[in-house]
Length: 118
Image (cartoon, rainbow, N blue to C red):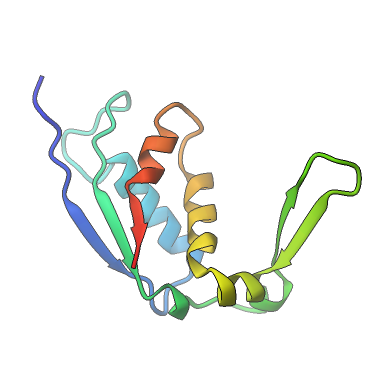
């Protein structure tokens, strides 16, 4: 078995929508852009994303989209508008989108570790 060679790919996020950018990143993390793609082998590349603060949202998504999480206690639903998340931590928007586009299996956490931000 040969050693997996991982390239470092740098992606500029300025003027790109989070969903379309996340789908491109997920495909690269899985390794589907390579010729020798196998489903059971994690052969994806490392990705560095820059200029996250300049991501664009279409329509009224910036005002209307809400990120939710629950503490699993009664009344523990927390909602954060996308505008606030983009201002405080823009990488969380892209990390959230990419994580949900990857397959839900044992390789998901290792793939997410190869995603970094500048």
